[in-house]
Length: 219
Figure (tube, one colour):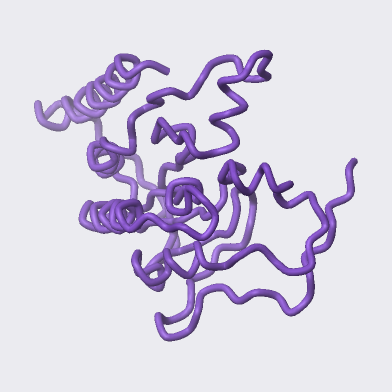
């Protein structure tokens, strides 16, 4: 997706929000239908995939797969929606739509571009993203893995090789310390999982399992 397409889509959403509000502002809106209130704590929000929305996730396995020939991808992600820089505008649109939560991802390939080397700049970036999300009145729902992994991890065989110990939990620990996830809802990977709040800051959010991760069997 080109940057121009992303801007046009944002403008379209803003226009739709304005059009929906016009009857109310002009005083000729029909009487609202009576609706049963949502249960207390009910979340109604929007969701994105970090790789597909942020753009230029150059250290991930998906970026390489998109840019080789032949490729299974119809188009490269490129700049995508540029949500990496325009996240606050996206939060603003969600707020205007009356949503109360926003699911987003933290890209492992950004915070650990090479094994054992963590980017303070990227950790600070995601801390700012979460702060901006909360400032818009949106409850962040953080996805730690949305199918993409760092290229170095993929080259090593990813999750599909037999390993004697679980993958490093340092990326998760780094996010825990910098991004205050004790205040967020966190899911380990994209999919239909039961949501739960993470523990308090003095209790690590994730602990390495004492047993090895089993080898994934090909289907």
